[in-house]
Image 1 (tube, rainbow, N blue to C red):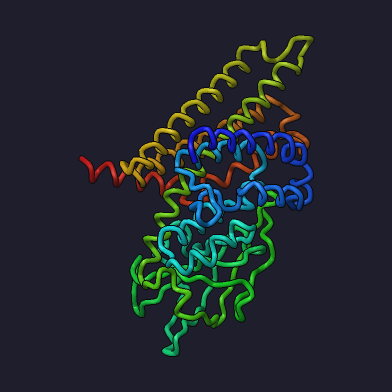
Image 2: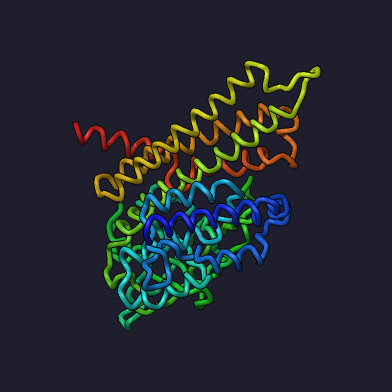
Length: 380
């Protein structure tokens, strides 16, 4: 896809979001459901597999192009991007980077067509640190693995067609050793998906627990046919996902600035638009500075990722800064809106609830600090 074609895609996505999704944000927040017609149009536009190679029906987007698209997705409710986010991100990335040719040929076209892949890594006692993983996949000696364990906070689990499941396949392995990834189809006997989680925000983006009670899958379900590669597969997908999450936050800050400027222009106190008050101007200036700094950081990190110069350090710095910045911007936006910013009908109120999780998922801010700090110490 050349630059002109990508600009056309970007423009189409931007119009779709503003014309079809934004007007229905409150409906999505209240019903906890993305309307079917929005989902169908997203499938038709190729959004469920845009990062995949063209031979499988994707657009073969670069990391920079993915970041630019994510900035558009971040403009609206998180539920919109969540429909296909695991496909084009962390779950699909495992298939793209580590899956066998047969696995890719079977599943990538299905994901492009609207089926959902879920990334099942997090556990009750193994969140940001997979070293504590307890889910096991035991080779039964008859060409199968038997999986036992549980996963928590798994995005799209209630609607998933297939799970990229991470489990220990090596007996007695500890830490990050012996972790493998297996492809487990929904509906496999012994696989149970719990009820939807009741969350602070991000209505319409469903997560839940997933339980594996002696779930049997054939050896062919092992991603790439290799044991012990699961931790590397997860970390590679998460690194790119962190850059995507940072770009989403940039898009959210664009929306926060727009909403806040509009409110400041049109809301009066004592007959004077509040935008004329210097302290309100100061808050707007801080929001715009956070936005511009975050955008520059994401695009620079994406360029270096595409060039192969940095695929780990940059994504962590971008995620740390942009998620923290977006939460700060959301807080400032609510403050500018005053009492109305605390009301459910205010867009900034929903964003305030939605954005908070970004500092936790796909590696918390604290984990990003550890990654950055350790990288600095190794490089000096």
